[in-house]
Amino acid sequence: MMISNPSNDVLATINRQPFLTDSGLETTLVFEDGIDLPCFAAFTLLQTEAGRERLQRYYRTHLQLAAAKGLGFILETPTWRANSDWAQRLNLTSGDLQRLNQLAVSEMRRLQPEADQMATLISGCIGPRGDGYNPQFLMSAEAAQAYHQQQIGWFADAGVDMVSAMTLCYPEEAIGITRAAQSHCIPVVISFTVETDGKLVNGQSLGDAIAEVDDATDQGPLYYMVNCAHPSHFENELQGTTWLSRIRGIRANASCKSHAELDESVELDSGDPQALGQSYRQLQSALPRLAVYGGCCGTDHRHIAAITQACFAS
Image (cartoon, rainbow, N blue to C red; front, side, top):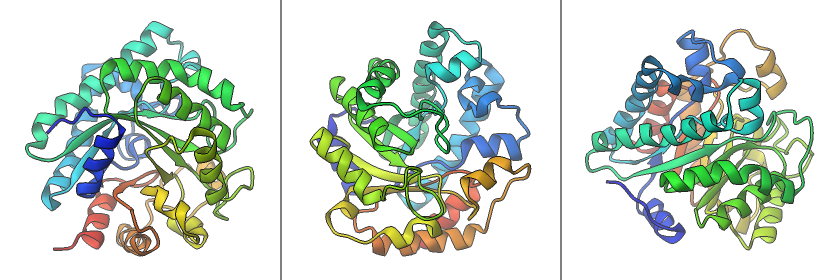
């Protein structure tokens, strides 16, 4: 079932049932498949038929897990690195970049008929302008809006249901992305990453960052997520009232290691899938409106299966 509705309808769809999404796409491709991903850019696989087929198999495996539990599924495009700064490093033109962003949406749409009666949403995935773990420079909200406007516009033209900005580490970039999405009348999800102390890279608390973005955008994001951090890094920070209800999705890492340690790793730390599943079950108690379940670095379909078993046993 394809859904192309404004914010209220997308949120109503997510309110009706839990949704799965995928896992650690890039780490799966690099460490498990042995694929060379320059700049960790999965969207480069869209350039070949073999690459597109590999992406289709990856998403199909996750769709089957959602179908087995009667859950919805968010098809997140493999475009986390598909912005102009990273394209320059990859020697891609603006025309190449537009084509690949919109081709990513088409590839997600190809999968929807296989979802049968499942509710599916197509989300255009946006990553940070630079390194989400150690940004070389911090943009103002105005600069971030101008920078991300292009990619969001391409997604809007391609007819996505929403956009999701992943691995953001400071609120100004999140504010700019939200305003850019608002200008295109497209729902936007903001996902922050945190360090091992549960704080953003600038030392700000997750609750304060969410409040800052909401205040600056009139509660613009559809909801918030946390990604690219292990639950043990942020679970103790989940204390409060209103702001906790704004977190509706988790895409955690498999490993307890810090971002710096993961950056230096030459081997994949896939952690313990069953233990990660139990961590998600505990997060259900801390996050009263948790509705979107996925994974990030080091996770694969095994982790998503363990999460669904722990959280939706029937």
